[in-house]
Length: 404
Image 1: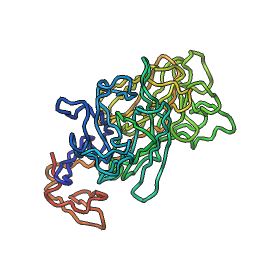
Image 2 (image 1 turned 135 degrees about the vertical axis):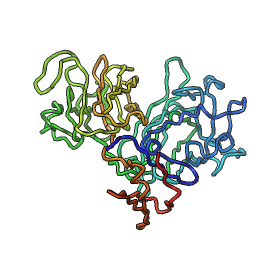
Image 3 (image 1 turned 90 degrees about the horizontal axis):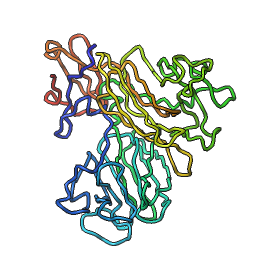
């Protein structure tokens, strides 16, 4: 089947293609116009920003308030909690003094965010995610006040348990700011029969040890062939710099020091390479390193021979409150047959998120035979030669599906 999707769904008056569903999105807040000012309620400046409803959220430019403690991880604007001092200010929905709340009319996965504090250094901030089944997941982190040269916001990554959310609450006993909020629509796993998988590496048995080549411990793990990949338990090596974003095990690059160790395929000193017999889309991963700010480069090779690259600075996670870096990948990372991850030193990976499966692609002749039938809360689409179930789309009408 072709890997180029030609189906488009229209929901709430907005056209959505596969790429919209598959792509992880990072909200930088830098594309919000403050009209020449330096601060404004988000409800005034950009209602429904990023497709979310926002309560107690403002937008600010940290550079206008030197020494306050806020910091952007990219660009020059952040979101912040609005009325934390209890005062009532026009434009902030919700109770004064309450935390920030974001909700969405469709499922979403939380991938990562950067945090800074305008109050105490080490401000405890708690994330509470509410899933569509009513269950919740929580995480509390210590947020730094960024008011000295060289200090940066705290990068927080979220694991597989932060999927399928309907709302996200963020609260603490003082003012805090957010930047680079990375999310992904959870409909990616159902809308076009793509299967989403997150490899946590925690289900690999190390036989009582703390480290092993992946080729020995779990060959073909996740359906991939792995070169220069090992499995380790970061807790067994305190202070080294590796960190899991969920569970207690990670993958890491094996022979980066150039020494030859049994079980690691590929040239000593080279990076991790994973390949698969079918095309896959890359959505996200978390990174840590034994060297602070290690330059790690991802290179994806597509089925058509094209390539895509991304370089990031991986943190050394060796202090309380520090977390692995959550890296999100957009629709350009679709239809890969190979992924290489390399850098000039040792690094670790966790919660590698990818999806596989056929996409719905119809010829003009097949599209002409298209029929639709509502089945419960879903829509069954059929045509000469096949069918597809669009899960969660009971309101699909003939005018809602178009073909390129």
